[in-house]
Amino acid sequence: MEGTAVRGRLTWQTATVASVVDETAKVRTLMLEVPGWPGHQAGQHVDIRLTADDGYQAERAYSIASAPGEPLALTVERLDDGEVSPYLTEDVQPGDELEVRGPIGGYFIWEPAFGGPLMLLAGGSGVVPLRAMLRRRSSAGSSVPARLLYSSRSLDDVIYRSELDADASGGVTVCHTLTRSQPQGWTGYARRVDAQMLAEVAWPAADKPLAYVCGPTSFVEAVASGLVGLGYPAGRVKTERFGATGQ
Amino acid sequence: MSPISRGFRRKREEAPAGRVPPGQYVTTDFPVLSAGPTPHTPLTEWSFSIAGGREPKMWSWEQFRSLPSETLTTDIHCVTRWSKLDTMWEGVSLDVLLGAVEYDARYVLAFSDGGYTTNLPVADLLGGKAWVAFSFGGSPLGAEHGGPARLLVPHLYFWKSAKWVRGLQLRDTDVPGFWENYGYHMYGDPWKEQRYAGD
Image 1 (cartoon, each protein chain N blue to C red):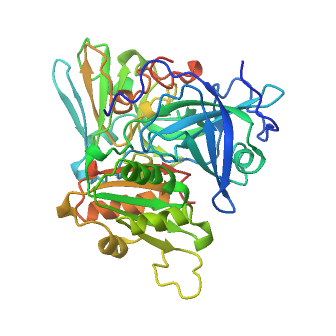
Image 2: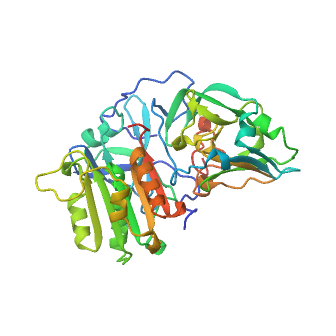
Image 3: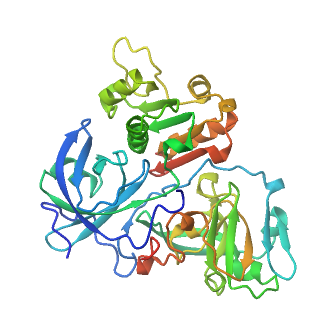
């Protein structure tokens, strides 16, 4: 249930990297083994703690990429001036250990019982928690209608591309927009998400959709206000943002 | 005892001693974290109210802005682990606002446009520790950062500094607000790392 996602005290647990998958040139998925992992809901996140051999520690929060019932997986985008993400996307190897604490967050989650239609809107690596929702929908055999509008810089920057292609053949409408460069013959959208695009792609407000928006602040601001402009009640538009303004 | 993450090294400069709570890192950005769309209430419709005292009290924007204000420079700490140093604000002290009301409640539930709420002890709002801020860095507070006005309680994690704040409900008992209902800490002292319930 919402509101009870965090029970008792959350403790740090040792996680072992089981395998890594390079999703794009800058994005990697880490599959983690966490003995006694309590399970999680689609859309939640975890805190990660790294410890250097001199005792220095750094903590960050990352969205969970896997569906409930699946082993914990995180998909991390490398920020070149970052401290933790370059390590997780370049240095980490199977067998390495780090610590996790979670799952955390009970608002930006989706369960099949919440219904839909489901309107997912992702900017860049904001697709990660939405992918967990699509995997949840699929593993639960849910027939809730779902659409994903996903904004990436280029086709090479699309995370989970083949999986989303498979979703598209499995009853989920997946719509890409490529904002910086497009391959030869690209017939999809080629601009930032705007009101016109939302009007074309998003479920009509009359269908009482449930929207989840995740991405950089500028993306989320534009999309969330665009959906409100289309008549979505603010309470049916859940957002998760990362990054600063003006970037 | 934490396991060593093989090959992990510090890359960031050490923060000035005593300035940054445990588990935080310093950013020069001002990240935005909100659970829903940004509300845009026109100033003509804006008010700030305090309910639950002997008499309800309400200020229009014009009345609120005619109250004495203070400028302050302070550090802020977000539960998502960023801290921002030396941020500059202007706002009306809660000492002024609560001083206009008679009450003996010990807690407040702050409420905002968009339905956000957060709970705080009254004692944490008094004594020059909390403001309703309307300016950041010398400019009117932007809507994405909580403008026209937000609560500013810099000694607690920043989710307690409710964006788009519209008032306070004085209460005898401490009830969880929005994030507190989702498992975040009822008090949220960054120096004690009170991030989640039970911390």
